[in-house]
Length: 495
Image 1 (cartoon, rainbow, N blue to C red):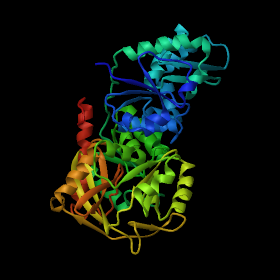
Image 2 (cartoon, rainbow, N blue to C red):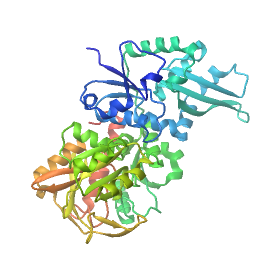
Image 3 (cartoon, helix red, strand yellow):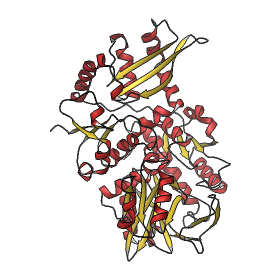
């Protein structure tokens, strides 16, 4: 049975093309109407004007992934378009093909328009095909410049083409390229092999609230070296050296718009084992994605609303006050606000909309502590209770500038002593992300367990998360890294 195909645009009236066998849908409809979230097996072609971070186009691909749809471009590709390091890697990988394709160009610059992997000029078709495989965007514009000193063509930047910007004389060609693309079978990308048994631990010695303190970092290194992984601490300037290693372990706070994501992406491209993997970073660092994902899979959460400018004023009617407002990329209790009334809601949401088209509102559940279940390879690793800071509603209390004033005490339990319902809830949530290393935050209220969020880079600090397992906690994590390297070298697949 043919899978349904949705063409998503900002405004259908602006699209000069009509694709046979596809349903044309506005971005706002797709993002806000429940019937699209409930559709199964959907291919989504995102033709929005912009894929800028947290724009409408960005959320089309992000929520399509949460719904189990197949978006093109996906979020990884959207991020790659913004990464000069990824673009440089592409330029180097395709150097011979670029020079051959552009050898007859006389000017110092050249712009290549790619439509579903095709170009109107046959001589550039093969280069277009390979670029599309690296950056799968329906309509793509690649800017080249001629490097006079090295006497070679190089990629300067890559950007999407708005459907409304396609020249009229190209439109018949675009329709033919789209038809060919929609009807052909897809092949999965080949993975690269690994290299030596060397582990890079990415950290930032200047980070004020890192996911692991200095003593924990040393314990990771000791554990790794005890099982044959030669270990080196690396920092953001070491991106170009990443290919020297067999595995990357990120112990720096992750974010999509950050070098930690670029490291994870390059590791993936080089066939290097990565914890955190880029897909986990993408999924876990955006609370809009997590809210949609957990709702689609009926995981119990506090009552949650994805808020946009059209529904913000109704949020209080649905959730009541107080409620919680969250930036999509908030972390360590920052970007999370307790809202007490309608005036605060409108004012705080307005500030957040300056950064993102969508934010999260959640009912307020008052509890004395938050559970954290650490999960690795789809198995519980540790269980902690993080108690609220004194006279505060969060585990971390901050001043108006965001600096930490105080945090609450913690308690670590043996996994076997933790409530079984807690563990099953945490595993169910984490398994929706992948098989990486996650920390699932959960509130317990009236005997029920509510998932608050899933962290891709959970804290491991000495005396806290390792209070029960001690050094064995670090050994278990490093054994997983070793096993994944071995599987990668043997050409195996991770489940």
